[in-house]
Amino acid sequence: MQVRVGTVGGRMVVAAALAAMLGGCAGSADGDGKKSAGASASAEGSAAGGAGAKGGAAPAGARIGGAGSACELPVSFHVAKRWRAKSVDAEKELAKASKSEDGDLSGALAEAFLRQGPVTAACEIDAKPAGNIGFLRVWTGKPGEPGTASADSVLRAFVAAEDNVSKEKYRSVRTGGGLDAVEVEYLYTSKLLEETKKERALAVSTPQGSVVLHLGGMDTQEHEEMLPAYELAKQTLMLS
Image (cartoon, rainbow, N blue to C red; front, side, top):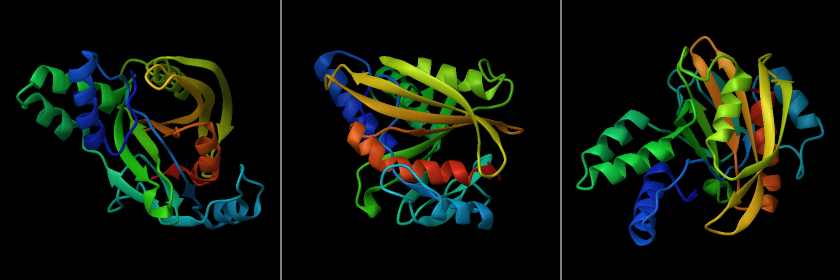
């Protein structure tokens, strides 16, 4: 079961409540997504002037990923204007969950929400300040971990860990910052909500480990409205 609401902490609370009611366990934590934007001068220029996804180009906001930014990552890119990035301390959240009164359940839920395949949640970029409900999420993995031999293997393991997916379409791409990447579009079916929607993710390998950028959405229409942000993040993605 996937539960897609709010921040990681908020999702854990809702998941715990659902688990108590349904006797179930939450699945992987991905999520709703939204805009991201421009980076280097040349990349920003092409992003602003080029034909983007539905809705046109997303205006560029702050660059994240570098030291001192909202999220320190192996890569950096611009988020869309008014989007708010927040770092996710997965180890801290996992430790906190394991010490709660229902440590086993909370720990399992935290693990499900904070890890997906070979990668761990590292950053959430919130679209609400820009007027949309959704997130663009960044997941990272350490070098040498199982399933991290290549960007392709990382991405396939990431998608496989998200249950109820179909019609995956993988392709090799190159980011605006010159990184070789693998991208996938697929359909995710929520058994809880009984609906199917589009999702998309991108993976790159870096000397510091693998990185996955994921865009979900409340539904397919929402997903498509968020694509300009995702595309601009891809166009401006480079090593930190």
